[in-house]
Length: 241
Length: 262
Image (cartoon, rainbow over the protein chains, first blue to last red):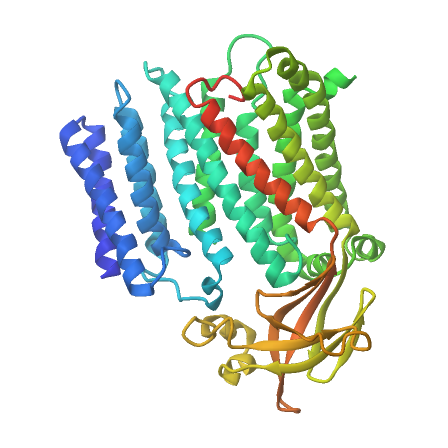
Protein backbone atom coordinates (compact mmCIF):
# COMPACT_ATOMS: atom_id res chain seq x y z
CA UNK A 1 0.00 0.00 0.00
CA UNK A 2 2.77 2.43 0.97
CA UNK A 3 4.51 1.71 -2.34
CA UNK A 4 1.33 2.59 -4.31
CA UNK A 5 1.00 5.88 -2.42
CA UNK A 6 4.57 6.74 -3.26
CA UNK A 7 4.10 6.06 -6.99
CA UNK A 8 0.83 8.03 -7.04
CA UNK A 9 2.50 10.98 -5.30
CA UNK A 10 5.44 10.87 -7.69
CA UNK A 11 3.22 10.73 -10.78
CA UNK A 12 1.04 13.58 -9.49
CA UNK A 13 4.00 15.83 -8.65
CA UNK A 14 5.68 15.18 -11.99
CA UNK A 15 2.45 15.81 -13.91
CA UNK A 16 1.78 18.94 -11.84
CA UNK A 17 5.23 20.35 -12.68
CA UNK A 18 4.72 19.64 -16.40
CA UNK A 19 1.23 21.22 -16.30
CA UNK A 20 2.66 24.37 -14.69
CA UNK A 21 5.42 24.47 -17.28
CA UNK A 22 3.04 24.25 -20.26
CA UNK A 23 0.65 26.81 -18.68
CA UNK A 24 -2.26 24.36 -18.28
CA UNK A 25 -3.67 26.35 -15.36
CA UNK A 26 -6.81 24.39 -14.56
CA UNK A 27 -5.13 20.99 -14.92
CA UNK A 28 -2.24 22.19 -12.74
CA UNK A 29 -4.56 23.28 -9.95
CA UNK A 30 -6.40 19.94 -10.07
CA UNK A 31 -3.10 18.03 -9.91
CA UNK A 32 -1.76 20.24 -7.10
CA UNK A 33 -4.95 19.67 -5.12
CA UNK A 34 -4.79 15.94 -5.85
CA UNK A 35 -1.19 15.61 -4.63
CA UNK A 36 -2.03 17.52 -1.45
CA UNK A 37 -4.93 15.15 -0.85
CA UNK A 38 -2.81 12.09 -1.68
CA UNK A 39 -0.13 13.28 0.78
CA UNK A 40 -2.84 13.85 3.37
CA UNK A 41 -4.19 10.34 2.72
CA UNK A 42 -0.63 8.95 3.21
CA UNK A 43 -0.39 10.74 6.57
CA UNK A 44 -3.79 9.30 7.56
CA UNK A 45 -2.63 5.82 6.60
CA UNK A 46 0.50 6.18 8.77
CA UNK A 47 -1.72 7.38 11.62
CA UNK A 48 -3.96 4.30 11.28
CA UNK A 49 -1.19 1.75 10.68
CA UNK A 50 1.38 2.99 13.22
CA UNK A 51 -0.94 4.79 15.66
CA UNK A 52 1.14 7.96 15.40
CA UNK A 53 1.65 10.84 12.97
CA UNK A 54 4.54 10.76 10.43
CA UNK A 55 7.73 11.28 12.40
CA UNK A 56 10.96 10.07 10.84
CA UNK A 57 12.38 8.45 7.74
CA UNK A 58 12.11 9.41 4.06
CA UNK A 59 8.84 7.60 3.29
CA UNK A 60 6.93 9.22 6.17
CA UNK A 61 8.52 12.56 5.23
CA UNK A 62 7.34 12.20 1.60
CA UNK A 63 3.69 11.94 2.61
CA UNK A 64 3.87 14.78 5.15
CA UNK A 65 5.94 17.15 2.98
CA UNK A 66 3.94 16.71 -0.24
CA UNK A 67 0.81 17.46 1.76
CA UNK A 68 2.23 20.54 3.58
CA UNK A 69 3.99 22.07 0.56
CA UNK A 70 0.95 21.35 -1.65
CA UNK A 71 -1.46 23.17 0.65
CA UNK A 72 0.96 26.10 1.09
CA UNK A 73 1.57 26.38 -2.68
CA UNK A 74 -2.18 26.37 -3.35
CA UNK A 75 -2.81 29.09 -0.78
CA UNK A 76 0.07 31.33 -1.85
CA UNK A 77 -0.23 30.87 -5.63
CA UNK A 78 -3.75 32.32 -5.72
CA UNK A 79 -2.39 35.73 -4.68
CA UNK A 80 0.07 35.98 -7.60
CA UNK A 81 -0.61 37.65 -10.95
CA UNK A 82 1.57 35.25 -12.90
CA UNK A 83 2.26 32.18 -10.73
CA UNK A 84 3.67 29.92 -13.49
CA UNK A 85 7.34 30.10 -12.41
CA UNK A 86 6.44 29.74 -8.74
CA UNK A 87 4.20 26.72 -9.42
CA UNK A 88 6.86 25.12 -11.64
CA UNK A 89 9.57 25.51 -8.99
CA UNK A 90 7.25 24.35 -6.17
CA UNK A 91 6.31 21.27 -8.22
CA UNK A 92 9.95 20.61 -9.16
CA UNK A 93 11.01 20.74 -5.50
CA UNK A 94 8.27 18.24 -4.56
CA UNK A 95 9.27 15.94 -7.44
CA UNK A 96 12.96 16.17 -6.50
CA UNK A 97 12.06 15.39 -2.91
CA UNK A 98 10.23 12.25 -4.00
CA UNK A 99 13.11 11.29 -6.28
CA UNK A 100 15.46 11.47 -3.28
CA UNK A 101 13.31 8.82 -1.60
CA UNK A 102 13.96 6.44 -4.51
CA UNK A 103 17.00 4.81 -2.90
CA UNK A 104 15.48 4.47 0.58
CA UNK A 105 13.13 1.71 1.80
CA UNK A 106 9.48 2.42 0.88
CA UNK A 107 8.13 1.54 4.30
CA UNK A 108 7.16 3.01 7.63
CA UNK A 109 9.97 3.67 10.07
CA UNK A 110 10.13 1.03 12.87
CA UNK A 111 8.32 2.33 15.94
CA UNK A 112 11.36 3.23 18.07
CA UNK A 113 10.45 2.91 21.74
CA UNK A 114 11.36 6.52 22.54
CA UNK A 115 8.53 7.71 20.25
CA UNK A 116 6.30 7.06 23.27
CA UNK A 117 7.69 10.21 24.87
CA UNK A 118 5.88 13.49 24.14
CA UNK A 119 9.03 15.58 23.59
CA UNK A 120 10.44 13.05 21.12
CA UNK A 121 7.18 13.06 19.16
CA UNK A 122 7.06 16.85 19.13
CA UNK A 123 10.70 17.09 18.05
CA UNK A 124 10.13 14.98 14.92
CA UNK A 125 6.67 16.39 14.15
CA UNK A 126 7.80 20.01 14.37
CA UNK A 127 10.89 19.26 12.28
CA UNK A 128 8.82 17.77 9.44
CA UNK A 129 6.33 20.61 9.57
CA UNK A 130 9.14 23.19 9.63
CA UNK A 131 10.92 21.65 6.63
CA UNK A 132 7.60 21.81 4.74
CA UNK A 133 7.43 25.57 5.38
CA UNK A 134 11.12 26.10 4.62
CA UNK A 135 10.79 24.16 1.34
CA UNK A 136 7.88 26.40 0.40
CA UNK A 137 10.03 29.44 1.24
CA UNK A 138 12.71 28.02 -1.08
CA UNK A 139 10.20 27.92 -3.94
CA UNK A 140 9.16 31.51 -3.20
CA UNK A 141 12.71 32.85 -2.99
CA UNK A 142 13.91 30.99 -6.08
CA UNK A 143 10.96 32.17 -8.18
CA UNK A 144 11.51 35.73 -6.85
CA UNK A 145 14.88 35.76 -8.62
CA UNK A 146 13.08 36.29 -11.94
CA UNK A 147 12.11 39.73 -13.23
CA UNK A 148 8.33 39.21 -13.07
CA UNK A 149 5.80 41.63 -11.60
CA UNK A 150 5.30 39.31 -8.62
CA UNK A 151 8.83 39.72 -7.24
CA UNK A 152 7.82 41.89 -4.26
CA UNK A 153 5.01 39.49 -3.30
CA UNK A 154 7.36 36.49 -3.65
CA UNK A 155 10.09 38.11 -1.53
CA UNK A 156 7.58 39.15 1.17
CA UNK A 157 5.83 35.77 1.08
CA UNK A 158 9.16 33.94 1.19
CA UNK A 159 10.31 35.97 4.16
CA UNK A 160 7.06 35.30 6.06
CA UNK A 161 7.10 31.56 5.30
CA UNK A 162 10.78 31.39 6.29
CA UNK A 163 10.04 33.01 9.65
CA UNK A 164 6.99 30.80 10.35
CA UNK A 165 9.09 27.75 9.43
CA UNK A 166 11.83 28.96 11.77
CA UNK A 167 9.38 29.37 14.67
CA UNK A 168 8.18 25.80 14.15
CA UNK A 169 11.73 24.53 13.70
CA UNK A 170 12.91 26.18 16.92
CA UNK A 171 9.91 24.73 18.77
CA UNK A 172 11.09 21.32 17.59
CA UNK A 173 14.65 22.09 18.68
CA UNK A 174 13.34 23.19 22.08
CA UNK A 175 11.56 19.83 22.44
CA UNK A 176 14.70 18.07 21.19
CA UNK A 177 16.82 19.84 23.80
CA UNK A 178 14.46 18.58 26.51
CA UNK A 179 14.73 15.07 25.03
CA UNK A 180 18.53 15.34 25.09
CA UNK A 181 18.45 16.60 28.70
CA UNK A 182 16.25 13.68 29.81
CA UNK A 183 18.28 11.10 27.90
CA UNK A 184 21.90 12.25 28.20
CA UNK A 185 21.85 14.79 31.02
CA UNK A 186 22.79 17.77 28.80
CA UNK A 187 20.46 20.06 26.85
CA UNK A 188 22.80 19.67 23.85
CA UNK A 189 25.84 17.61 22.91
CA UNK A 190 28.47 17.73 20.21
CA UNK A 191 27.21 15.39 17.51
CA UNK A 192 26.45 15.26 13.80
CA UNK A 193 22.80 15.94 14.63
CA UNK A 194 23.74 19.07 16.58
CA UNK A 195 25.94 20.35 13.75
CA UNK A 196 23.18 19.86 11.19
CA UNK A 197 20.46 21.37 13.38
CA UNK A 198 22.61 24.43 14.13
CA UNK A 199 23.59 24.79 10.47
CA UNK A 200 19.96 25.06 9.42
CA UNK A 201 19.27 27.80 11.96
CA UNK A 202 22.44 29.67 10.97
CA UNK A 203 21.39 29.51 7.30
CA UNK A 204 18.08 31.15 8.25
CA UNK A 205 19.96 33.80 10.23
CA UNK A 206 22.32 34.44 7.31
CA UNK A 207 19.32 34.85 4.96
CA UNK A 208 17.84 37.41 7.37
CA UNK A 209 21.11 39.38 7.73
CA UNK A 210 22.23 39.89 4.14
CA UNK A 211 24.64 42.84 4.01
CA UNK A 212 23.27 45.78 2.03
CA UNK A 213 25.54 46.70 -0.90
CA UNK A 214 27.35 50.04 -0.80
CA UNK A 215 25.79 51.00 -4.13
CA UNK A 216 22.53 49.95 -5.76
CA UNK A 217 20.23 47.16 -4.60
CA UNK A 218 20.88 43.67 -3.32
CA UNK A 219 21.64 41.13 -6.04
CA UNK A 220 18.39 39.12 -6.51
CA UNK A 221 20.30 35.92 -7.24
CA UNK A 222 22.23 36.27 -3.96
CA UNK A 223 19.01 37.00 -2.08
CA UNK A 224 17.09 34.18 -3.76
CA UNK A 225 19.75 31.55 -3.10
CA UNK A 226 20.24 32.71 0.50
CA UNK A 227 16.50 32.42 1.17
CA UNK A 228 16.27 29.05 -0.55
CA UNK A 229 19.24 27.41 1.21
CA UNK A 230 17.52 26.68 4.58
CA UNK A 231 14.74 24.73 2.82
CA UNK A 232 17.16 22.84 0.60
CA UNK A 233 19.36 21.98 3.58
CA UNK A 234 16.25 20.97 5.57
CA UNK A 235 15.32 18.49 2.83
CA UNK A 236 18.89 17.17 2.84
CA UNK A 237 18.64 16.68 6.61
CA UNK A 238 15.41 14.71 6.28
CA UNK A 239 16.36 12.54 3.30
CA UNK A 240 20.05 11.93 4.05
CA UNK A 241 19.85 11.36 7.80
CA UNK B 1 34.80 51.35 16.90
CA UNK B 2 31.46 50.28 18.38
CA UNK B 3 29.79 51.34 15.14
CA UNK B 4 32.11 49.11 13.11
CA UNK B 5 31.41 46.19 15.41
CA UNK B 6 27.66 46.59 15.00
CA UNK B 7 27.36 46.26 11.21
CA UNK B 8 25.16 43.73 9.43
CA UNK B 9 28.17 42.98 7.23
CA UNK B 10 30.08 41.69 10.28
CA UNK B 11 26.99 39.69 11.33
CA UNK B 12 26.83 38.04 7.92
CA UNK B 13 30.55 37.25 7.80
CA UNK B 14 30.43 35.83 11.35
CA UNK B 15 27.45 33.66 10.40
CA UNK B 16 29.18 32.53 7.20
CA UNK B 17 32.29 31.60 9.21
CA UNK B 18 30.17 29.71 11.76
CA UNK B 19 28.39 27.85 8.95
CA UNK B 20 31.76 26.87 7.44
CA UNK B 21 33.13 25.76 10.81
CA UNK B 22 30.05 23.70 11.70
CA UNK B 23 30.06 22.11 8.24
CA UNK B 24 33.73 21.22 8.78
CA UNK B 25 32.78 19.82 12.19
CA UNK B 26 30.72 17.03 10.62
CA UNK B 27 33.59 15.16 8.89
CA UNK B 28 35.90 16.12 11.74
CA UNK B 29 33.59 14.49 14.31
CA UNK B 30 33.40 11.34 12.17
CA UNK B 31 37.19 11.14 11.90
CA UNK B 32 37.74 11.88 15.62
CA UNK B 33 34.84 10.10 17.30
CA UNK B 34 36.64 9.43 20.58
CA UNK B 35 37.77 13.06 20.92
CA UNK B 36 34.20 14.36 20.47
CA UNK B 37 32.81 11.67 22.81
CA UNK B 38 35.32 12.86 25.42
CA UNK B 39 34.18 16.46 24.87
CA UNK B 40 30.61 15.37 25.65
CA UNK B 41 31.58 13.32 28.68
CA UNK B 42 34.26 15.42 30.33
CA UNK B 43 34.35 18.88 31.88
CA UNK B 44 35.49 21.38 29.24
CA UNK B 45 38.74 22.45 30.88
CA UNK B 46 39.76 18.84 31.59
CA UNK B 47 39.12 18.08 27.92
CA UNK B 48 41.14 21.09 26.75
CA UNK B 49 44.02 20.00 28.98
CA UNK B 50 44.49 16.77 27.04
CA UNK B 51 42.97 17.41 23.61
CA UNK B 52 45.49 19.97 22.36
CA UNK B 53 48.16 17.28 22.52
CA UNK B 54 46.04 14.35 21.32
CA UNK B 55 44.01 16.11 18.62
CA UNK B 56 45.42 19.57 17.81
CA UNK B 57 43.23 19.96 14.70
CA UNK B 58 40.01 19.44 16.70
CA UNK B 59 41.25 21.82 19.40
CA UNK B 60 42.06 24.48 16.78
CA UNK B 61 38.63 23.96 15.20
CA UNK B 62 36.94 24.22 18.60
CA UNK B 63 38.87 27.39 19.50
CA UNK B 64 37.97 28.95 16.14
CA UNK B 65 34.29 28.11 16.66
CA UNK B 66 34.26 29.69 20.13
CA UNK B 67 36.08 32.76 18.83
CA UNK B 68 33.65 33.34 15.95
CA UNK B 69 30.67 32.78 18.29
CA UNK B 70 32.18 35.41 20.61
CA UNK B 71 32.56 37.87 17.70
CA UNK B 72 28.89 37.26 16.84
CA UNK B 73 27.97 37.93 20.46
CA UNK B 74 29.92 41.22 20.56
CA UNK B 75 28.42 42.20 17.19
CA UNK B 76 24.92 41.44 18.51
CA UNK B 77 25.41 43.47 21.69
CA UNK B 78 26.84 46.45 19.75
CA UNK B 79 24.04 46.25 17.18
CA UNK B 80 21.38 46.24 19.90
CA UNK B 81 22.96 49.26 21.58
CA UNK B 82 23.70 51.41 18.55
CA UNK B 83 21.14 50.45 15.90
CA UNK B 84 18.10 49.06 17.67
CA UNK B 85 17.75 50.72 21.07
CA UNK B 86 17.57 54.32 19.81
CA UNK B 87 14.85 53.66 17.15
CA UNK B 88 12.85 51.70 19.71
CA UNK B 89 12.97 54.59 22.22
CA UNK B 90 12.32 57.18 19.50
CA UNK B 91 9.34 55.55 17.80
CA UNK B 92 7.96 53.71 20.87
CA UNK B 93 6.58 51.15 18.39
CA UNK B 94 5.98 47.58 19.52
CA UNK B 95 7.66 46.28 16.32
CA UNK B 96 10.95 47.98 17.19
CA UNK B 97 10.86 46.84 20.81
CA UNK B 98 10.05 43.28 19.79
CA UNK B 99 12.87 43.39 17.23
CA UNK B 100 15.29 44.47 19.97
CA UNK B 101 13.92 41.89 22.45
CA UNK B 102 14.29 39.14 19.84
CA UNK B 103 17.98 39.94 19.39
CA UNK B 104 18.63 40.22 23.12
CA UNK B 105 16.92 36.87 23.72
CA UNK B 106 19.00 35.22 21.00
CA UNK B 107 22.15 36.62 22.63
CA UNK B 108 20.98 35.23 25.99
CA UNK B 109 20.52 31.78 24.40
CA UNK B 110 24.01 32.03 22.88
CA UNK B 111 25.48 32.98 26.27
CA UNK B 112 23.61 30.06 27.91
CA UNK B 113 25.20 27.68 25.40
CA UNK B 114 28.62 29.04 26.33
CA UNK B 115 27.96 28.89 30.08
CA UNK B 116 26.57 25.34 29.82
CA UNK B 117 29.66 24.32 27.89
CA UNK B 118 32.15 25.96 30.24
CA UNK B 119 30.62 25.66 33.70
CA UNK B 120 28.56 22.46 33.79
CA UNK B 121 30.09 19.59 35.77
CA UNK B 122 29.92 16.02 34.53
CA UNK B 123 30.63 12.48 35.54
CA UNK B 124 29.55 10.33 32.63
CA UNK B 125 29.00 6.71 31.64
CA UNK B 126 29.05 5.22 35.14
CA UNK B 127 27.70 1.66 35.12
CA UNK B 128 26.16 0.48 38.39
CA UNK B 129 24.31 -2.62 39.57
CA UNK B 130 21.90 -3.12 42.48
CA UNK B 131 23.62 -2.61 45.82
CA UNK B 132 26.50 -0.52 44.47
CA UNK B 133 27.28 3.03 45.56
CA UNK B 134 29.09 5.79 43.69
CA UNK B 135 30.28 9.29 44.58
CA UNK B 136 29.72 11.95 41.92
CA UNK B 137 29.74 15.75 41.98
CA UNK B 138 29.47 15.89 45.77
CA UNK B 139 26.66 13.37 46.09
CA UNK B 140 26.74 9.76 47.16
CA UNK B 141 24.42 7.60 45.08
CA UNK B 142 23.25 4.13 46.02
CA UNK B 143 21.41 1.87 43.57
CA UNK B 144 18.79 -0.06 45.57
CA UNK B 145 17.20 -2.01 42.73
CA UNK B 146 17.32 -2.39 38.94
CA UNK B 147 14.36 -3.95 37.15
CA UNK B 148 14.37 -4.79 33.42
CA UNK B 149 10.99 -6.38 32.59
CA UNK B 150 11.43 -6.61 28.80
CA UNK B 151 13.42 -9.28 26.93
CA UNK B 152 16.97 -9.58 28.29
CA UNK B 153 18.00 -10.65 24.75
CA UNK B 154 17.70 -6.97 23.75
CA UNK B 155 20.46 -6.03 26.22
CA UNK B 156 22.76 -8.89 25.25
CA UNK B 157 22.43 -8.27 21.48
CA UNK B 158 25.27 -6.46 19.65
CA UNK B 159 24.86 -2.65 19.69
CA UNK B 160 24.02 -2.37 15.99
CA UNK B 161 21.17 -4.89 16.39
CA UNK B 162 19.91 -3.37 19.62
CA UNK B 163 18.50 -0.27 17.97
CA UNK B 164 16.38 -2.36 15.57
CA UNK B 165 15.08 -4.49 18.44
CA UNK B 166 14.11 -1.51 20.58
CA UNK B 167 10.65 -0.95 19.16
CA UNK B 168 7.50 0.07 21.02
CA UNK B 169 6.10 -3.47 20.95
CA UNK B 170 9.17 -4.88 22.72
CA UNK B 171 10.34 -2.07 25.01
CA UNK B 172 8.16 0.15 27.18
CA UNK B 173 9.50 3.35 28.69
CA UNK B 174 7.80 2.56 32.01
CA UNK B 175 8.56 -1.19 32.03
CA UNK B 176 12.15 -0.81 33.15
CA UNK B 177 13.35 1.20 36.10
CA UNK B 178 15.94 1.66 38.81
CA UNK B 179 15.59 2.82 42.40
CA UNK B 180 18.26 5.27 43.56
CA UNK B 181 19.05 6.73 46.91
CA UNK B 182 20.84 10.09 46.97
CA UNK B 183 23.02 10.50 50.08
CA UNK B 184 21.96 7.19 51.69
CA UNK B 185 23.31 8.23 55.11
CA UNK B 186 21.02 11.27 55.28
CA UNK B 187 17.80 10.14 53.57
CA UNK B 188 17.24 6.45 54.23
CA UNK B 189 13.57 6.53 53.20
CA UNK B 190 13.91 8.88 50.24
CA UNK B 191 14.53 6.41 47.41
CA UNK B 192 13.62 7.72 43.94
CA UNK B 193 12.55 5.70 40.91
CA UNK B 194 14.19 6.52 37.56
CA UNK B 195 13.07 5.45 34.09
CA UNK B 196 14.56 6.08 30.66
CA UNK B 197 13.85 9.76 29.84
CA UNK B 198 12.75 10.37 33.41
CA UNK B 199 15.86 11.40 35.36
CA UNK B 200 16.39 12.29 39.00
CA UNK B 201 16.73 16.01 39.68
CA UNK B 202 17.81 17.55 42.95
CA UNK B 203 18.69 21.25 43.05
CA UNK B 204 21.02 21.64 40.03
CA UNK B 205 22.15 18.01 40.14
CA UNK B 206 20.77 15.45 37.68
CA UNK B 207 21.25 11.66 37.52
CA UNK B 208 20.16 10.29 34.13
CA UNK B 209 19.84 6.69 32.96
CA UNK B 210 21.37 6.59 29.48
CA UNK B 211 20.89 2.84 29.01
CA UNK B 212 20.20 -0.47 30.68
CA UNK B 213 22.98 -3.08 30.57
CA UNK B 214 23.24 -6.76 31.46
CA UNK B 215 26.09 -8.55 33.23
CA UNK B 216 26.13 -12.09 31.87
CA UNK B 217 28.44 -13.36 34.64
CA UNK B 218 26.33 -12.00 37.48
CA UNK B 219 23.11 -12.61 35.59
CA UNK B 220 21.67 -9.25 36.58
CA UNK B 221 20.68 -6.01 34.84
CA UNK B 222 22.37 -2.71 35.60
CA UNK B 223 22.22 0.91 34.50
CA UNK B 224 24.60 3.35 32.89
CA UNK B 225 24.25 6.81 34.40
CA UNK B 226 25.33 10.32 33.49
CA UNK B 227 25.68 12.69 36.45
CA UNK B 228 25.53 16.40 35.62
CA UNK B 229 25.33 19.64 37.51
CA UNK B 230 24.09 22.55 35.45
CA UNK B 231 22.96 25.87 36.92
CA UNK B 232 21.47 27.28 33.73
CA UNK B 233 18.99 24.67 32.48
CA UNK B 234 15.84 26.35 33.74
CA UNK B 235 17.01 29.78 32.57
CA UNK B 236 18.07 28.36 29.18
CA UNK B 237 14.76 26.65 28.48
CA UNK B 238 12.76 29.67 29.66
CA UNK B 239 14.73 32.18 27.57
CA UNK B 240 14.63 29.84 24.56
CA UNK B 241 10.82 29.53 24.80
CA UNK B 242 10.36 33.30 25.17
CA UNK B 243 12.66 33.83 22.15
CA UNK B 244 10.42 31.56 20.02
CA UNK B 245 7.35 33.49 21.21
CA UNK B 246 9.08 36.79 20.43
CA UNK B 247 9.93 35.56 16.92
CA UNK B 248 6.32 34.44 16.41
CA UNK B 249 5.06 37.84 17.63
CA UNK B 250 7.50 39.71 15.41
CA UNK B 251 6.46 37.62 12.38
CA UNK B 252 2.79 38.40 12.98
CA UNK B 253 3.41 42.14 13.57
CA UNK B 254 5.51 42.52 10.43
CA UNK B 255 3.47 40.17 8.20
CA UNK B 256 2.19 42.88 5.88
CA UNK B 257 5.15 45.29 6.20
CA UNK B 258 8.21 43.08 6.29
CA UNK B 259 10.77 45.88 5.80
CA UNK B 260 12.08 45.51 9.36
CA UNK B 261 14.41 42.54 9.56
CA UNK B 262 13.82 41.81 5.88
